[in-house]
Amino acid sequence: MSAKIIDGKKIAEQTRGKLKAEAEAFVKKYKRQPGLAVVLVGEDPASKVYVGNKVAGCEQVGIKSFAHYLAVDVTQVKLIELIDKLNRDKAVDGILVQLPLPKHIDERTVLARLDPKKDVDCFSVSNAGALLLGEPCLAACTPAGCIELIKSTGVSMSGLNAVVIGRSNIVGKPMAMLLLQENCTVTICHSRTKDLAKVTKQADILVAAIGKKEFVTGDMVKSGAIVIDVGINRHEGKLYGDVNFGEVSKVAGYITPVPGGVGPMTITMLLANTLKAARA
Ligand code: NAD
Image (cartoon, rainbow, N blue to C red; front, side, top):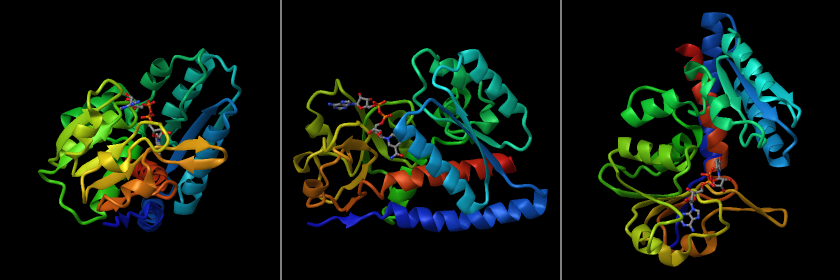
């Protein structure tokens, strides 16, 4: 069997077209652009690329971006002062703090300071809690993008076995919550899971968010499964997913490539959340 490729780039472009129209309608109604503030601390090359892509995405759909680049040795107090300022700023509808932050800054303290109404990547306790309770909220961008990619297959998720590998607060846990909302039977696996392949082989939907190059091999996947590869692993100047694409694409029914799968959807969901926050 040869899997159908889920083209994240194409789906992201189509979604951004719709968001552009929504942003235009917003400007007409409120006489201002929706605004997203992006905060980057330090010079991490990958983070710089992500922030650059977010700013470019804003431009593409007509969202005003406010990029704040802070020195790697900025104090936690100064960073929190900036967050407070952005929380008060009426031109800013969404705030994204690019992670990871340098070690001398306590990530949880900083993220807790975000106004939940502007927390467009679902980093705050209040948004994460709302997601858990199934209440309206700004859902985490990467998992929300994965759900859109699964929906694009046309396969009904209700009742399917979904397995998420990874339990991070940014991907694994919110991913599991969103799959549960779609009425999947959800299993979360992680580094202590025993006999991982036995669990993953049961998955009709398999989401890999591990951070290990080509970790998921063909023998771990059920025939015909939908495989969503969240991983971004850099190796000798090339990008690799968490899934061994060559092997798994022979077994799965649908698969996302890396690059060109989940990545473009993550930023698109950030733009969608910013518009949602602006309209709230
Ligand atoms: P993380 O390091 O916080 O979490 C990794 C998870 O993998 C952990 O929960 C751990 O228990 C699990 N894990 C590690 N080794 C394992 C093993 N041997 N067996 C089973 N589980 C194992 O990472 P994260 O922030 O969740 O990101 C995961 C990957 O997704 C990374 O490659 C990251 O770069 C990528 N990512 C991509 C996007 C995107 O937009 N495409 C967004 C966020 C993260």
